[in-house]
Image (cartoon, rainbow, N blue to C red):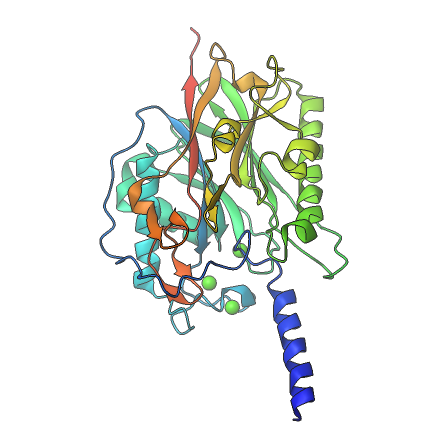
Amino acid sequence: MTLNNFKTFFTFLLLAICLINCDDTDPINPPVTEEEITPTPPTTTPETDPVTNQPTIAFYNVENLFDTIDDPENGGDNEFLPTAAKQWTVERYEHKLNNIAKVIKGMNYPIVMGLCEVENEKVVEDITKEALLSDYQYAVVHEQSPDHRGIDVALIYQPSVFELLEWKTYQVNIPDEQIANFTTRDILLVKGQIAESIVYVFVNHWPSRSGGEAATEARRTYVAAALREAIDDLQESEPNAKIIVMGDLNDEPTNKSVAEVLQAKTAKEGSIIVTDLYNCTSDLDMAGEGSYNYQGNWQMIDQIISTGNLLSADSSLSISNFQIYKEEPLLFNHPDNGLTPDRTYGGDTYYGGFSDHLPVFLEVTHVIFD
Ligand SMILES: [Ca+2]
Ligand SMILES: [Ca+2]
Ligand SMILES: [Ca+2]
């Protein structure tokens, strides 16, 4: 092979890799250069007490929760095997499950918790089987998504508090000029009952910014439009439906997809309209907080949004006090970027942390009328 041939081949190879990975789960850009960082010892994660004594609802991007078994129909799990460069072993998998269980405890064992970046139903069940969670009898709602890496969204819930009524998924087929048959994660809709209130929860994981925020924005506005349509349909048949939207939206509250297409308002805009969507994250977003650290900047890409009828304190079911679960064990001090979520992997280097995202949650008040 001549040098020019080699260059052409190499360029083609890079392009192919780029296309294959165009929807890599790293939400914003390639991982920060973590090679120079000393990994956190993975066996010393402390268990912390719950940060609230109120009932909670939460969402968590758990960063690539794959099992260690090869799914022959999914090429996307091949890097998460004991024999792969990442050396994804049962021991590491169990350490990660235990970390997630500690986070669930830390958020006071959410009644309902959305998850993303889970490989299959089994890995979600494995979370719920953690000893730390045994008192809560968590149950699972999961459906396989057509995402090319095989990662899905899911929901866990406490059946004694949240009665599961129905659930469905929305497959979103995004027309994309660069990639034929571009697929993303389904939107999961779960209908359940807390006390006397019916609530609808949409769990999301919108397409990543990998490849550039502007270049990929149309994918997220497309999914936002699909979600808006699903909500419009629901509100047409049930105008006062209590709706919670949660997920890793890979956009921030002020981006076009969230603010304009989904029409999620900031909570401070005028008086509350019961059927409108409000972004519960807005106050913390405007204060510079976030769930994801991109090169030193906190970004609020993991969000919880609700209809106005859930925001009134005298409602039979209300939510308030949105928070980012930002406890010390989930963070490490990056030499350039400051406090940053302590992730499981940087490239193939194992750090044994929790996730590249922080979990988010809010508090729930429910009133039973006699
Ligand atoms: Ca697997
Ligand atoms: Ca495979
Ligand atoms: Ca899957």
